[in-house]
Amino acid sequence: MPAYARNRKSMLTHHARFILCIATAMSTMLLSSVAPAQQYPHKPIRFIVPFPPGGATDVISRVVGQKLHDALGQQIIIDSRGGGATVVGTELAARAAPDGHTIFLGTFGFATTPALHRNLPYDVVRDFAPVSQIAQGMLVLAVHPSLPVKSVGELIAMAKAKGDRINFGTSGGGTSTSLAGILLQSMTGIQMTEVPYKGSGPGLTGLLAGEVNIAFFSSVAALPFAKAGKLRILGVTSAKRTSLLPDVPTIAESGTPGYELSQWYGIILPCRAPPQIVSRLHNEFVRIMHRDDVREVFAAQGLDATATSPAEFAAFIASEVKKWSRVLKEKDTRRD
Image 1 (cartoon, one colour):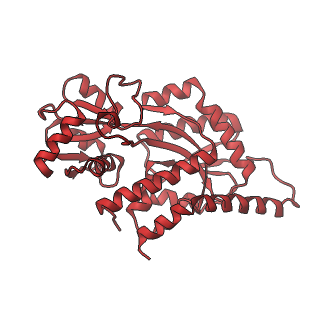
Image 2 (cartoon, helix red, strand yellow; image 1 turned 120 degrees about the vertical axis):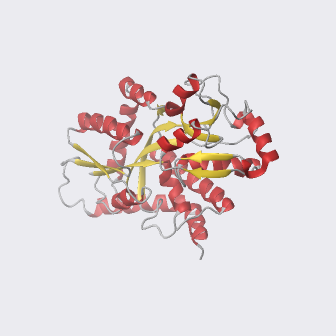
C-alpha cells in the first residue's frame, strides 16, 4: 500500500485509535490498582522539545516549564532534541514511559511530518495522547517593495499572468513558510518557484535584498522591516485578523476563502498515559495559559495563549494531518 494511502487510512481511523488509546490506559490503570499508587508527580518531569535551543519553542518551553514547576513542585527538565525535521525528538517522546513524567511540545510540524516523510518510526495518532493546545500564531505574506502589488488579489493576478516567474523564499522545504506558499498555490491555481533558504534569518535577508519576490514570515520578524518601508505586508495566514496588525486583511478575505495556516503549539503525552494524569496536566495548563504574565510573553512572540480540551486538541491534530496530506499529495512534494 502506498505511504500516502496508509496515512489517509490512519487519519480516517483517528477517533477509533484515540478511544483505544484511552481505553488501554484505563485498563492498565485498573490492572495495576492492586499496588499502592504513587503520588503524581513523584520525580522530575522531562519536557521534550523537538528543536534545538533558541527561537519561539525555547521561550515557550521555559516559560510554561517554570509555571508547571511552580504548580506541581517538581523540577521540569527541558530536553531540546533537534534533528530530523522534529523526528528525533518526536520518536523519543513516543517511546517514553507513559507515566506522565515525560511531556512533549507538539508543533505545526507534528501534523505535517507524516505527509512529508515515509516510514516514520511512530504514528502521530496511535502513539500519543494530546493534552491541550497552548499557543497559536500566524504568518504574514510580505513582498519586496519593488513588486508592484498592494493586495493579495493583485499578487494572485500577477502570478497568473507571469506563470512561475514569481518566486517565494522559505526557511526550508517542509517548514510552515514553505507550506504557506504551497497552500496558496493549491487554492488559487497559481504557479510560483520556491527558493529554500537555510533558516528564517537567511530567508528574510533574501527578501530584503530582492533575491525573491515574496515570502511568509512570523509577524515578529517582518513587522520592524514593514514599519521601515523595507517590506510590504499584504495579508496574514490566520482565519481572523490579528490585533497586532488590525488593518492587514487575512488571505482568506482577500480572495482566497478558506485559506488558513496557523503556527500552533501544544502539550502531548505518550499514548498510554493514565487518564487522571492527562486530566491533571490539562487543568494545570489551562490555568497557566490564563496567566497575564504568560500571555504577555507569548504576545511578544506573536502568539496567542490558548487552551483546549484533550478531545478538541486531538480532533484539531487529525484535521491538520488530513489537510496537509491532501495539499502535499496534490503538489507531489513528498520526500523520503
